[in-house]
Amino acid sequence: MSDANLDIENLRELYRELILDHARNPRNFERMADATHSAEGINPLCGDKLKLYFRINAANIIDDAKFEGSGCAISTASASMLTEFVHGMDMNTALQYFELLQQRLTAPDSPVEHAPLDLGKLRAFEGVREYPSRIKCATLAWHALRSAVQCDDHPASTE
Amino acid sequence: MSMTDYRKDFPALHQEIQGHPLVYLDSAASAQAPSVVIDAVAEYQRCDHANVHRGVHTLSHRATEAFEGAREKVRSFINAAKSSEIIFTRGTTEAINLVAQSYLRPILKSGDQILITHLEHHSNIVPWQLVCELTGAELVVAPINDQGELKLDALYELMNDKVRLLAIGHVSNALGSINPIQDIIAEARKFNMAILVDGAQAVPHMSVDVQALDCDFYAFSGHKMFGPTGTGVLYGKHARLEAMPPWQGGGDMILEVSFTRTVYNDLPYKFEAGTPNISGAVGLGAAVDYITAIGAENIARYENQLLSYLSEQLATIDGLQLIGTAANKASVQSFVIDGIHPHDLGTILDHQGVAIRTGHHCAMPVMDFFAVPGTARASLALYNNRDDVDKLIAAIRIATELFAE
Image 1: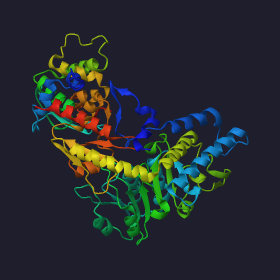
Image 2: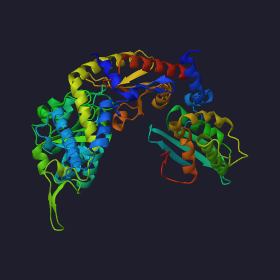
Image 3: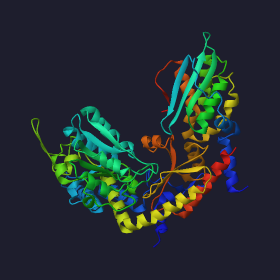
Image 4: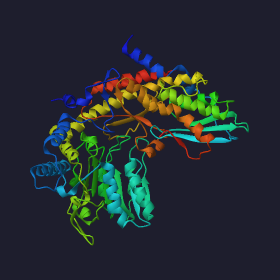
């Protein structure tokens, strides 16, 4: 294998097809007029700016999730996959997934706190571990989710 | 001697990143240091260090000589009339803030204007906003065109007697545009405004003569011209500096202190409160010697050719758009690629050993003008060569292949 091909193979560990697909064709990529919760996520390092919208019902179930804004492939794909992932999910469970994702990206060897949870498709982001400066991109939308459900008016920042 | 021979002087360039030889194209953010600078700092720390302007002992004398010797080198480097016009600062940012707080703030009134341009780095925007907030003065911004060049007619129309200060970059950090600073200053002299030039991106790439320019202030950083971080210079005309109150109080900036009265020290010490960055100044002096020995004209000529090659090669990539195509440029080429966010491009290039800057380059208004969230920016220094450019292009082609649908 040539060096160039080897580079591409290694980079595909980060830019997996699932991530590239969501980055090119983000799902639920629109404003939500009847959102009950919303928050902005800003990554000052690279200028990523996302706004996430949620409609959460009286039983704390996330009925719908959408987002808009601009960002790199990792942060856009992460937001897009988040909107699909938390659809129909209990709000607190969604927050537990955020903690789990954060832990899998930053301290993969530590004991798993939310053992029954399974990251499923979100495992696509595990390649980010090797790129510490990009972990913020993968978690930006999740930071915004947390701000939104905690009704925090201040934009979520990865800093 | 060909310019590429200087590469060997820079130890940091001789390493592998992710299994690839390092290609360093981020000198506009911070340049690497040659061994002579690294050694000068180490030698000073090892043999000559003590506090300056204080002790009668031998080391203090040596430290003072080294520190003041560096000041004299800087004076000569930018052809200031007197070494007392050279104030050592932490960098360009601190130098500009010094002028904002010490020169401008005391004289600024509501209704006064500060004139800047759309090309400025945040450090030549925010210090002026701070004094505007305090005084009710107005910040006025001269526009640029689609090539990233200053619209000179519009700039000149904004000059009038309400403007107390023109603060303008010599070379744009985001786009590389060189402003015709000599002409602009001549025009500004028709009015009663002071003139500050942010020279952070100019001094590593061209010769600067502050007397010929006739600016009141000229600010630059050591680390962008192969010196240590935490070093910088504010040049100010003697009469201007003399009339300004001190900025920070402390040791070294006084002649006599009692609880009722303090007599401030002479220039330049009036503006250098506290123990200065002595080893940094020594390193900056060594960087000045290094650049001077090569010759600023030689550097400019070499880099111009390399920049043309860089821009031409980038333009061969499908979907790549050059941002900043001014006729007169130095060192920098910004660009964006369809479908690849600059941040992703930065990661993919780093994976191949190529270091570029991605993002807004501390010039968000420039990004807004071109309606992009950020750009990728390759920037050159005297140690780069065509091979670096070729490796950058090959690495970008990998990125476009990876992101191709």
